[in-house]
Image (cartoon, rainbow, N blue to C red):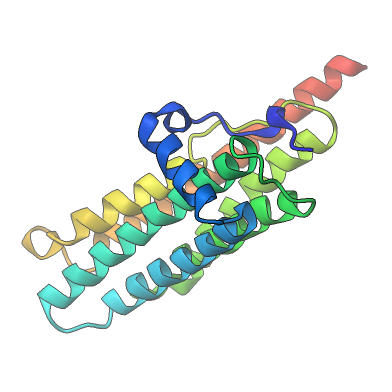
Length: 215
């Protein structure tokens, strides 16, 4: 049975277009687990596109790859939205649903940030951003595991991370006009890494505060 208290609050879940898309997917036989698994595929394409964008000679090619990467980052988020809606609203949850609800997200973060890191020639920074992203999820699940309300606070939770990467990719298309190649995405990685680390610390502090209240 799905614990709705552990569900990320999303305003988009209450929109007509989201409900319509989720109903269409359910009617077509899509399962929540398959949608969750598709999110990893979207993240893989995004990561490859970002990685390739740093090794293409033409400005047009770079721009096309950055747009592709940004699009698949958003597609990853749509998969994250619809898997839960198909599971809950359409009543198609599965016993192993909690695994597929969380595991693909961790893989997706690593794929996307590693791809951006490869694209800007700084894989270590990309992996650091991915690692800090995983740590934010760990602290949230740690709190939920000891019967605290799941903490989805930022400043760099998953929606904010994907908004940052998407926005940076779109801005990087025009980078030749104002900066050296890779500058915008490199800064985005630093912001994601620092912001995710602060998010994990904030969530850990919240856990400690709540535990001390129990004493």
